[in-house]
Length: 344
Image: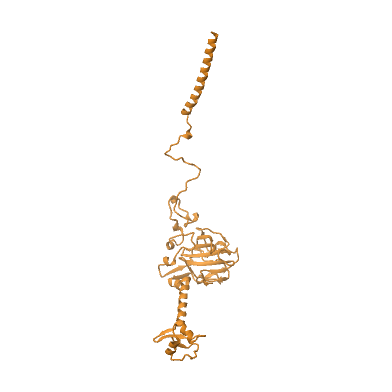
């Protein structure tokens, strides 16, 4: 009897342990079903949004060529939310119709200048007038120099000397350039642009309004330059003009306040490359004219030069000695005189 009770008790204990183990395992399974982890629940039709704290870049029109100082675009309070065509704020926009802060000389005079002439008033009673960018001697002037066109006037100075704006205007270019070095270009209300090159330091920025006499930088020797100096240009619609036509550098004043700009002046005086091409063509024509002589009814006239012989003259003019002698009724032993004209 006691043995039977012991066996029964042992069976009950084992059964209880088995049921306890089963219940614990089952409970964990149920809990895992009832309380799922939220990070696992993802809608496969939507991509998770990554919030890295940065705003998405908004795609805008390219405005790299329309840089402007915000201070010059002060709007009326009632129109603060309206869009503004910033180009209207730039000097002489009606003439250029663009404002480029990246390209040094983006404008074409031939394309822009449609009329035969234009009268330019250099200063107005309401502005600050004219101030010489720097008072110094001229070291190089407008024209051809060492087989290269020189479109400006070089003014002698020392590195660090103050360079000022010649007229009132707005800065279009203020940056480092390979040829000009540190360069500032200012556009003025009358359509002119002034160029200040080889600066050691720039003290203005694109879009900034400046007055005549205001410091824009310090003189230097940057870019394609040999020795400290200020390279100063005056341009109209991209065409460089001789600054000495406008400025008396000895007195530091304007020669006159009104200047007429004509296509004829550009073609015959300011367009250096075109002039150089025409001069070379005329020079070649002149040489050809001298060598071949003037055409006549019976041939060409040739002017005898030092060292000429009948044989050399015949070779130059692609003829023969006998032909020359026959045309001029002379013998092959005839002595030639300098300046003598003979038929070839």
